[in-house]
Length: 434
Ligand SMILES: Cc1cc2nc3c(=O)[nH]c(=O)nc-3n(C[C@H](O)[C@H](O)[C@H](O)COP(=O)(O)O)c2cc1C
Image (cartoon, rainbow, N blue to C red; front, side, top):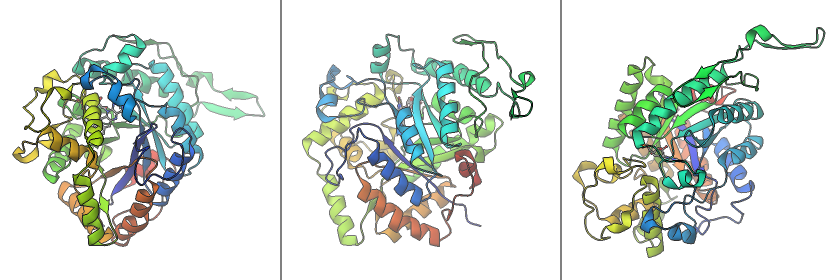
């Protein structure tokens, strides 16, 4: 049997794409766009919808919030956990993922909210664990931002505590026996008395054991420290690698790290971020590709501002049309490997070229008719070894997702490369089933 491919949808609860050419009518502040999009993805039998989140408006680019406010960029974000609940309510099978910071959220609150959402969604919630790279969130919460690796060290303890809270009720503790009037067996509900270096919690959690027992854990760190963290804790990782060699290297490295932590390679699924250019004819594909090469200047600035925010590093200091000089990754306090995908195979791109590639959205370089896109997705999976893709599309762009789900997915289904029905009840079961 051929190894099947997983798919996810990745976006954020924010204005991203508000002015896009293909935007459908609708207000990104309201749940409807996301719910409609999630239903399209569910028709395509995706594993999950994942919503990014940020806790402040960045001023990484030019030391000011100006560009971020002016163009409605990442950093302007509404709360992804609340959106995840609304999307869960309008879907039946697909997982819903929220992004929550370990640095700026008390662990008891996180454990409680995700367990509650796991009940509300009947076992479909995922938590995208972030350690918050951008300074803005810390400034808003009035907390000092620890160094890059120190944030991961603290997150290890955070996860340890949350896992103890999620298992503070034995799975069969709840009886709800009307005849005897016994709600739950007190002998099976345990305080945890956690006292660590950073956190303390008495427990038990005051939420009943949820269908998944804990949220499915997603992670997106790609520095060596981030990869180790993911290898230890995550069920899925998402990564922005644009070229096949990078994808293969990342996949092999992650699967090897997972085994170092005593886990099986298949317990961690790797998802590559893509946005294939799809056209029903080759002529249409070429026209779309050509348009992506010439974005307006505002789009270039928006892309550089977004990259600066993700890195927590001011890219405006460099000349747009000269090859970007190497930046010492240790100087980057946010996503340390944010730019590495642009440098693959000895490339020396200018900042403008990086911005065009970033803005173009053709993540993964995949383009063609539905058959050709399916060929390329299949080729990547066969070359890399497996797992899946997250399609990075904003909620306005429903015509894109409709085309993907209704024309590319059926080709993959015919080839036996994606599921034809959900088998599991929970997100975790569906993620681990293939
Ligand atoms: C695809 C992707 C999505 C991410 N989404 C978020 C997010 O929504 N919120 C956030 O605070 N950080 C987000 N991050 C940042 C990472 O979780 C991580 O904190 C950051 O990349 C720094 O770790 P690293 O140097 O190990 O990559 C994302 C990173 C990637 C690559």
